[in-house]
Image 1 (tube, rainbow, N blue to C red):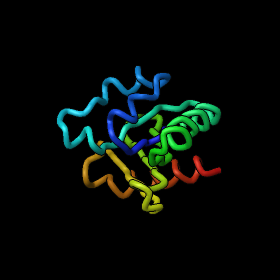
Image 2 (image 1 turned 135 degrees about the vertical axis):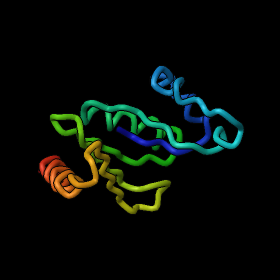
Image 3 (image 1 turned 90 degrees about the vertical axis):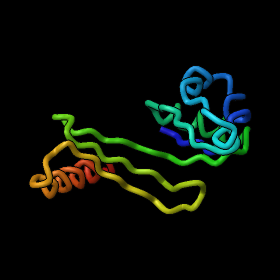
Image 4 (image 1 turned 60 degrees about the vertical axis):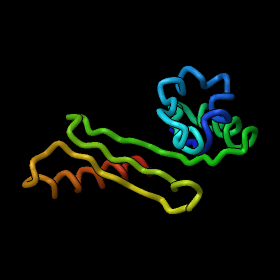
Length: 118
């Protein structure tokens, strides 16, 4: 997934991505001036194509984001290359386990991320 940061008018001008973007339309003027939008990419070629449109052609800030879901769908890990160009990678773990099982969930999340990095 590519996370695009920018104003709505510029982002929506990418015609080939309008169908994905229309459901992300901002609710108010402040959000229309700057917001993050997500473009789903299934292959490397799709990543490159979206990056070329949003970053190179439209001159918008783009970050890469990846989500990994466990087989039992109780655990999700997300990684992002940065936020609004700060270059600081981020990782988040979401779980539906009770608190007593959070430690195991974190271990599973780390395993998912390590597998994804191979």
